[in-house]
Image (cartoon, rainbow, N blue to C red; front, side, top):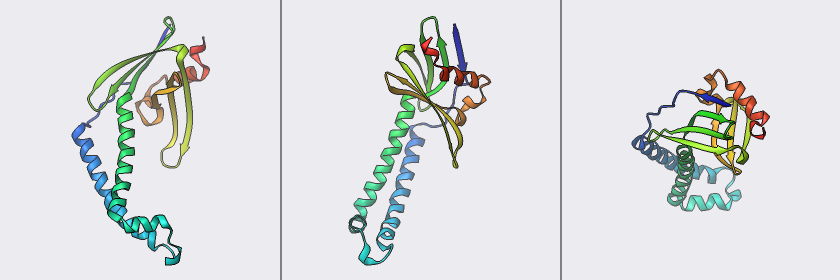
Length: 180
């Protein structure tokens, strides 16, 4: 039996130029913010209680600002690369006759589609209900193949929240369909 869940293909206006501009602006803002923040670290409290880390940052403001900015930018680039490497999931199909999960993704940076096929026996799922003051309630599904996360879907922050059968999909994941 095949059971399919699908949303419309996500579209993006991002390309490598807009991503590059975004990170250049972010680098400049972080660089300038760290130039302002470093003296504030040192001047906080009495001068006798200056810690050695703040003193090192204050003595080398250019290098400190560069390291802080490059560190944050590297983290953002890692997250973006990971997101575009895996792509955005727009179709999930459970093929019970072949015991395979078929996931279709689209890379929003270059609009290339990819078909992924996984055996039920190698799959595991991590379904998380999170709630915080910034993003509110979130239902996040992590699909693991051989224990490594291959897809991550945030149902409440993507078009998946508009799928009429989303509750059935979540129930199917929670009950462990691949153990049948």
